[in-house]
Amino acid sequence: MADQAKGKGIAPKRASNPADPGQSSRPLLPIRTLLEDEEDGEDYSEVIEVLKQHIKSHERDSVSAIKNISSTLAS
Image (cartoon, rainbow, N blue to C red):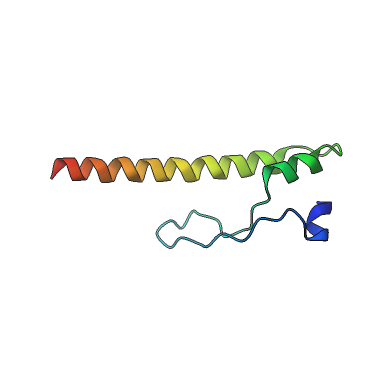
């Protein structure tokens, strides 16, 4: 990744969430930066992995919110 070496386009490191050990503390590059780098003929595996992580994070948040609402309604 050429932009990484220049220090451009790198997202700040996300804080680890102790309540969610599956959350990565690895810095994530913005999708636009990844796509620009992929135009050089590289594959999209890193872009796909970033998107999968993002979706999983939102799924966990949604499931947690639904469980909280359900338990609140049940009590």
